[in-house]
Every structure is written in structure tokens, then in C-alpha cells.
Amino acid sequence: MAEYQSVRTGAGVRTAEIDQGLKAHMNKVYGTMSVGMVLTALAAWAMSGLAISDVPTAAQIGSNTYLTDFGVTLYTSPLRWVVMFLPLVMVFAFGAMINRLSAAGAQTFFYTFAAAMGVSISWIFAVFTGFSIVQVFLITAVSFAGLSLWGYTTQKDISGWGSFLIMGVIGLIVASIVNIFLGSPAIMFAISILGVLIFAGLTAYDTQKIKTDYIQHAAHADSDWLAKSAIMGALKLYLDFINMFMFLLQLFGNRE
Image: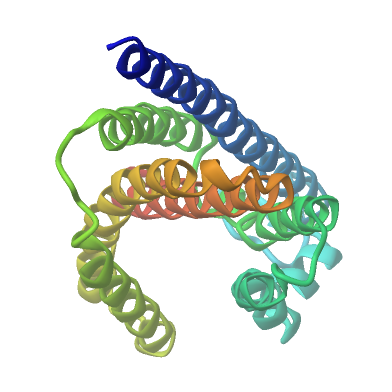
């Protein structure tokens, strides 16, 4: 009986350690993601300040909004394709390089990617009003927090969602690229609605997967893996947030 009690006590201590480690791990994930979001916002704001002006030029894009020479180069020259697709290329490169990078290198890469994403989406300041951008950001933040909390706390296994959601993302990417050339508002509206639903599901799914992956690997006490896992988790949730924000902005943002 005494031996049974000692085993039970040991298991309880181990469970408490895992719970404490999981909280620290999730704090690392959300903290890294938050820094990335700040870098994205700063890069987008800084770039828009260089590209958009109220000083009249030949490139007028709104009633009192104009593109600077830099803005013309950034948004209307072939450079725009590089800016548009660079974050996508970096995501695939990050996935291929993560095992060869140190934890510090992976974190630096993530922050560089977040800044590149800011440059890529800086055009929203030329298209949407500042108030609507802030408004949609807050809506996205509240929705993301609720979905991520549900994914973390639910006892329901939603791992089966993964394959369907990933196929949905691939479909969105293909449809979005095709619509660049078609320019159909109806297709863009459908893409935006599906995008919101898909990335809402991914927010809950990714949160639960980050949690379960930690619990499965915590016993190995591999600090390097845990550090890089937190950064990969931050990247996944960051992408869920950014994509949900962009699709909601397409649906509800007020255009200049």
C-alpha cells in the first residue's frame, strides 16, 4: 500500500511538472507570436508612410491620397510580385530549414518573416480607412482569443480537422492566385468567407495540436526541440491570425 501511494505521489508530481511546463510553453508561443505581430504592424505602418502621401502626385489612389515614387515602385512595378509572394516562400523555407536551425536562428527567422509580412500587407493602408483597419483588427483579436482558448480547453479531439483544413488552405491559395488575373469580386467574396471559416478552424486546431505535441514530448526533456516547437507554434498561430484578419478586412473593411 505504501509503495502504491509512492507511485501515485510520483505520478502526481510529474503531472504537475508537465502542467507547469505546458503553461510556460504556451506563454512562449503566444509571446513570440505577439512580438511577431508587433513587428508586422510596425513594418506595414512604416512602409505605408514611405509609399502613401497626401501630397498631390500623378499617382492618385483616393480623394486625398497619392502614391509617392517609392509607392509606385512598390505597388505597381514588377517588384510587387516579389513583395507579395516573399512571405509564402519564406514559410516553405522555414519548414524545410527548421531542423537545421538553432532555436535562436529559428526565432530570428520568424521575426524576419514577420517584418516581411508587414511590408507585403502595407497596401491595406492605401485601400482601407485607418479606422476600419483598427476595428477589424480588434474583431479578429477577440475572435482569435476565443477560438484559441476553446482549442486549448476543449476535451473534444479535433485532430481529424487537420487534413480537411489544409486542403482548404491549398484551395484558397490556388483560387486567390487565379483571381489575381480574373479580378472577380464574386470570387473574392466567396474566398473571403471560406478563408475566415478555414482559419477560424485552424486557430482551434493548431492550439490543440501545440498543446498535445508538448505533452507527448515533455517526457523527453529535449530543450532544443521544445524551444523550436514553441517558435513553430507561434508561426502557425500567427498565420492563422493574419489570414483571418485579411479575409475579415476584405469582408468588412471600409475602402478609401
